[in-house]
Amino acid sequence: MEIDFKKGDGLVPAIIQDANTQKVLMLGYMDEEAFKKTQETGLVTFYSRTRQTLWTKGETSGNYLHVVSIKNDCDQDTLLIQVKPDGPVCHTGTDTCWGEENTKTENPLLFLTELSNFIEKRHAEMPEGSYTTSLFRDGLNRMAQKVGEEALELVIEATNGTNDRLIYEGSDMLYHLIVLLTHKGLRIEDMVAELRERHNPGWKKH
Image (cartoon, rainbow, N blue to C red; front, side, top):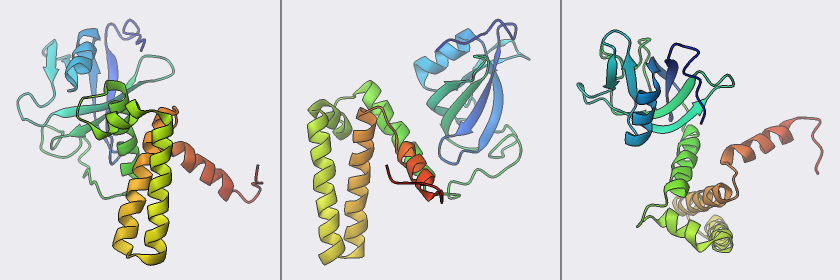
């Protein structure tokens, strides 16, 4: 990731967004050292323009910002960092620096993005002892097989089972589908985009 620190005299703005609720939590600034520390620790670290030193958000309050993803904008001079906050973000005690409530129940479908981000992280890091890691290591055929197996179990529960078991097996199928999509360099949002396109009255089957 190339970041243009020179444009802002060594600093770039970093927009902090909750990866789950999509709420913008705060705005801070990073120099190159703060950015590297953020990457290394997985905790958001800023450069304080007032104190002219690095500070890791939460080092005093305990309300750390755990990095989920980091994106650079088109001009390579502004960062969008999605996080999981440990608690209120603002020093005044509010959830955001704009006094908004950072509710995690706005739209449960947003969790699919959070899950996709988590599975992508597993794919990148491949930690030992992880079931998701084992699926990636088993390869494409095994991942595709698991999607088929879970789909069959979903059908069985739909026709002869209970609603609780239907939801359980459907969740298994969706998880394994996201793993398969991740392996192929795709995301669940790509399928959502396809469904949105199909919802267009002028859509025609391929």
